[in-house]
Image (cartoon, rainbow, N blue to C red; front, side, top):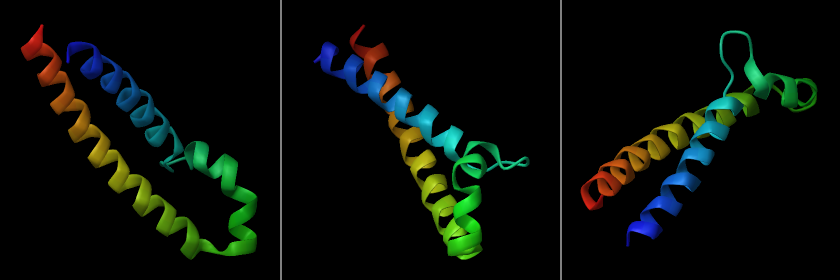
Length: 76
């Protein structure tokens, strides 16, 4: 159980880092660099939808991260 929790914690941590880096910030961040050209072709509405999905994923992954951290600390 402890090994499974450690592996899940590492996977969730890497996914959380990736999702945070993909979000657009004040200076458009990494997502602006990747999809900057596509926004001109597809439109701004698509980018807002992607940002909303990334925001929800960040919240979900953060909650999973804290729950797994508490679980690992409990079994340690």
